[in-house]
Image (cartoon, rainbow, N blue to C red; front, side, top):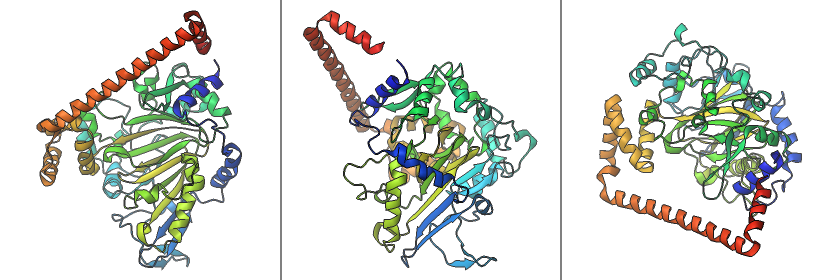
Length: 488
């Protein structure tokens, strides 16, 4: 079975209701859009803001050089301020232009934590994989006392923090990956079926699919379990977690109990992720090693209905990432620009930018974002919880991961007693009862688990009945032959 058959099977499992993956002809329509984004004359950063007081729309774009000159010196207000003239006579807003562009070579972790992460400001950090001065040396295990010391004493760049470039810089091109003996025969997640079960393809088949497919919105490797494969886990040796994001409080729980948090990404041109907020109040970092991505960010105050483009998607239209960037997002911006700053579009803001190899995007908790692969891409992303976003993570985890929150609180009490006190204070403020102290919640959990197991058994029984029906209709020998033909 070649890559075409493997891809067809994966697509059928991932979106069984979509019979024609090429129905919108985006393979032919997308290149002009991509060429525009990649053109040297196109500014990679742009924004649209609506002043609710005046209803005026301010749409701007700026170059990388201009972005590097900007620094956010105060917490974002998410409000338009008065316009003033630059020295060259051009109009310039007094509010920062997001994302802020930093360079790992001259930005200590402490500065990032205080001026950007703590103030919920999105950033693009350049040169992290290329021997930057802000990454821990290797993916070595550290004690939480060591980690706390590193995070508390990181306001200056020291020689001990300087590391060599990531091996991924040389290993994560498509040509290298398809010929990598550790990876090419490993199956990576490229989708899920309707029951939530993982759909995998061997990397060598997927890269062939990536290079030859004409799908509107192709399959996308977004794999969080590569570390469980004895060969694929070598990917952990190919990159290191930058010191900007090394404080990982969910790490207290242990790898087996914590939620999924790191993903290896291989994305064909036109694939991507639809607009969303990262789960459990976590922040995220995304480093691109190969190719080009396009991002859009919305601040937390922009309503979900606006961000999702509800009432702007026509019947029968798809809402995958490529449709969002090429069709839905322009409609959202036009509606915002003509809204007069009224209703849900009051104080509307969105920021678009292009990410290039070697750049790391920091997405603060609560920010809406969507990503589209302008070219074929390879990268890595991780979600994390630090002291700066602990409150929001705790509030969402205690209700979204009730059993895990109990274990986490006990670990916090041991390693971070100040954060444990903070968590308990938030519980008292909200009169929140932890799962292990709530018999009714435990009863509901047991019932939900039993219902899930019952439905799983019923589905398996239904499959067995279907197999028996086919055997009765075709005969046992014919059924065996057909199964062999299917898997040959």
